[in-house]
Structures are given as C-alpha cells and as structure tokens.
Image (cartoon, rainbow, N blue to C red):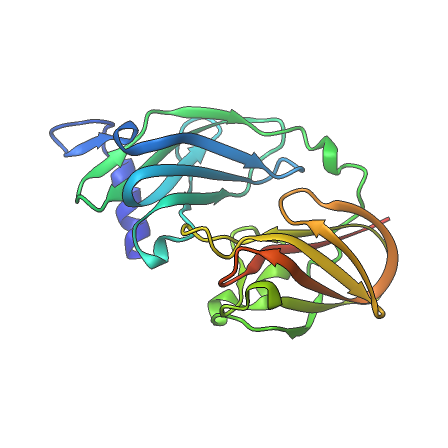
Length: 254
C-alpha cells in the first residue's frame, strides 16, 4: 500500500519535469507497451519491459489518464524489468487514455506521455453462456502461497486477484464443484506469471469423472469444448515452473 500511494503521487507530477525530478519513462523502455485484451472487452493486461529494474504502475481512464490505477503484479518482490498490470473495470468498445509511471532502481521517478487504447466490442464472448466457475466451491488444491493468494481468488470473477501455488510448477491443480451437472461449452485458465519468467502456465487439462480433456492453451481466450460435469479438476500440463496459478478459472455453459 505504501508503494501504491507513492506511485499515485508520482502521477501528479509533470512528465519529464526537471524541477520535480521526474524523467520521461521512454528513457528506460526496452520494448513498447503491449496490451492484451479480455475477449469481453472488460479487462486488459499491459506488459512492458524496462532497461533497468523498476517498480511500475499504469493510470488510466476514458477521458484522461486518471480515475483508475493498476499496479505491477510483481512489485511485491521489488524492482524488476518485465512488468505486467491488469486493468479492470473497462467498458467494451471504448477508448481509454493511459500513462505509465514508476520508480527506478537508480532512485529516479519516471513518467510516460499519454497513450490510448480501444477495448474490443466484446463480440467474442456474446455467444458463450455465463462463467459458472464464479462462486464455485474449491474441493481441493495442490497448494496456496498465502491467504492473500488463496485458491478462491481464481473463482471470484475478479482479474485483480489471483491464486498462486507454493512452487508447484507442472504439479499444480485445483478441483472445483460447480454445484450441479452442467453442459460445458468452453473452459479457460488465465495464468498468473512473474517478472522473472516463471509461473506461466502454457497449457492445462480438465478432468471430469475420470476422463481427462486437453491439453488446452492457457491465456485470456477460452477454448471451446463439449462435455458435461459438476466436479472438475484443472491441472497444469506445461509451465515455466515456480509459483504457478491463475487469475481466473473459467467454465462457460451452453
């Protein structure tokens, strides 16, 4: 929370203002920002690489780069160079303004120019039913790193929270109870990842009543399937190791 308050204070400074000691963010950018959109247009993940270790965040809004702020997922471990921030609460088919800001290991404050992005219309998700994994019961989980990174975070419908294992890598799994037998049309595993390249789930399987389906690619887009069940086990099939887990587990019904 201290870092968040500090970064918000940085947002109030002028870009590249010598008097305030804030330098242009472009001085430490190695790769241009990349934004990956949720298919429904309500969330997006911003990724950027810096030339030095830094703690970063992004401020964003529909009329100005303000109103909401997304912090780097990995800032709790200190400064690093590969950054990701999940922007939530977005409206589909809407233009947003955003600004990057951060504190470098060199002790300097950095702030970018104002950029824009437009969220997708959300058409990709209109023919899917509801995500019935939201609110499902966790039956069993391989592990949880802490109470703040509990398995239930992957079933709350909030991309601002996440489930992390305690170093389970490819052995990570979560078993959930949907509360009733349903016809399943699509499944998804929105992988967490770390700035050092670990914790990324590349593919996963889903086991229902002893039958294993997949592997399916992990990521922001759900995969079409056709099976039915109530108790499902999502297992990491291939990953980069480490504290694997998920922002959200998704089960869409027909």
